[in-house]
Each structure stands twice: as structure tokens, then as C-alpha cells.
Length: 415
Image (cartoon, rainbow, N blue to C red):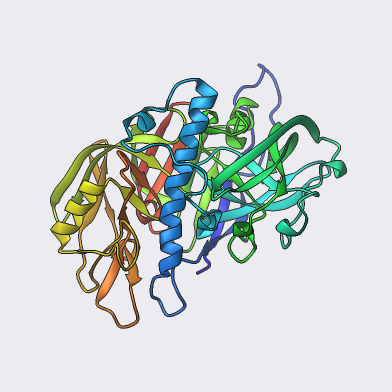
């Protein structure tokens, strides 16, 4: 499935200007078309079982790797990692092929003169990387960024290695460079120039050239400011907020505020508890008016499709639905339910319940003609927290506020 999406940016006036300074007018918004890539369904509408398994495993592995970066960068264990009852994952448990089943991607420009590349926008990570000139055949099919062709590229003589499991990785060298998104320009921005891409980054699995993380610096492998935070620090945005509409036609990422056309009423805000991931308190999980769980830690992640929760509460959720454990057929942590049943599912943040539609909750039948459909809420591998992805986010308008360290949710307007 490919959706036509837009990346929208607010006017690029500085946050602060000297008294008497002249500010040149900018357009209210600037738009760049972005697209959604999905391989979680087969052409016949049934779920792609290998892709579902891989996506769930990748998401959990990505979060775990972020915990390790957090501890390295801050000197203290991440609070959620400290709650885990399982040991840290060793390299080799989560293949990189897991990486690219669902992503939102669009254009950025890098270098001087600027050259355009496509990147995946991911709130569950914090680094920007692109394929480099030494990447060779492993980067075939992607547009190469060559720092020797840019007058603003500065080699900072630091290597990087982004591990995603089974010893698969993106590795290379770090540069400082100029990065622009539809008029917003960051200078001296950390960019990873890859010398190696795993086969998981082949264009059929990963159509974008690279990835742009939108989390906090504490989970950066580079221990460097992510691109949007650099925009904020360099006073390139009016408001240090970015927002997503990830719901069908007209979806967009809006940088520098929110787009009032896409939501109704006020935002419900929930504070970030630890600045690493966009980690917030999930007040309740409800199905058919029955509250299954309360006061859960959660991570808001545009880089995953699923909602992944702890084993006990997810089991209770599907018991209330009359669902079946599908670990032996679909994969560990997955459940099915009768396709013709339409459950009322909601997640509550700061006292307000937001519904998950049947369309996003139902991932599709497990086989052609089956009455059993796969649910979009999945049990994690002994997770003591929840990972909230597109199954929920496609039902709300979401904002991510850097300055106040909070996430906001509002009702979609339908526009």
C-alpha cells in the first residue's frame, strides 16, 4: 500500500530577533510529498506472517539498543531497562531484515550544493544516516551522499556502527554537514555516512535512502543533536514542536508547530518521563468498556506499526475479546480474533480515552477465507512497558513538544 502524504513546515522565522530587526515574510507552510511503504499485507489482503514476526522482533530490538545507547551517553541505566526481567539482547537475536516493513519517508537535502535524499522519519531513534561513496554494492539502488562533493562537509574522524541484530548493521563515518528540510536549514548537523548497508536495506524492503531519527539525543549512537533539535537550537523554527497526521489521504509531518486543519478541539498532553524516547504514561487500556490495565509506561514510536505490550495484560486483553493465542501459527505474542467482531478499543492518556478503529486494529485474516483476523496489539518479550505505534497513531493527531518535553494527542478532523 502506498499513500500520498505531505511533510508540512511552518514559516522559518527565528524564535528570537533583535529589537528593530527586519524579518522577511515566509510562506505559512511548505509541503514536500512523502510516501508510506508497507509489506505487512499480501496482495490478497491476508497478513504477511514473516513480515509481521520480523516487525515485532525488530521494534523490540530497536528499543533495547536505544537503552544501551542511553546508558553509554548518560552514564546511568534507562529507568525502563532497569525494570526488565530479561537480560540485554546480544547481537544476533534480531535480524536487520526486520527493519523495513513499515515506514514513512520523504525528502531532505544534504550538502552544499544541496542534493535531495529520501529518509524514513522515526520518533523511535535519534540519528541521521545516508549511504556513502564507499558503500559499494550493499547500497545499490539508493542515492549516494558523497561528502567530497560538498563544501560544507566536515569529517569529524569518528566511526559509527548501528547494530540491528544477527551482526547486521549500518556502519561508516560521521560528518558534520548542512541539512535542509523544505526551507529549514541545520548547519554542522551530525550525519552518518555509511560504508555498509545490510541486505535489509535493499530498495524492495527499504525504498528510502536513509533514516532520520526524531527522538532525544540521549539515545543517539552519535551522542549528537538530532536534526529537529538542531533546528530548535539554531532558532530555525517558530515553535519547537513537530506533529504527525498518519491517517490515510492527506497524511503529513508538520515541523514548527501543528496544522489546525487536521484536528478538532484541544490537545491532551502527557509529559515525557525520561528524555530519550518519547516516553509517557499510558493511563489505561480498554476493550469493550472493560479496563484491562492502568498506569503503564509507554514509548510513542512512529517507526513501528504495532502496539506492543506486556505479556500478562495483552493476554487479558484478548481474553476479554474471546481471542486466540496465535503464537504457534503467526508468531510469539500474536493473537487472532473473529473477523466479524468489531471490538471497541481505546488507549487513555492524561484521563482522555482515544479510540483505536477496527480498521487499524484488524491487521487482516491469517489465511484466505479465514474467519480469524490478526490483532494489532501484540505481546512483547517480557516487556515491562508498552510501545505505541501506528495502530494507535493513525487514529489521532499527535504533537511532539521539545521545549516542554511532552506529547499531545487531539481528535482528527477528517480533513
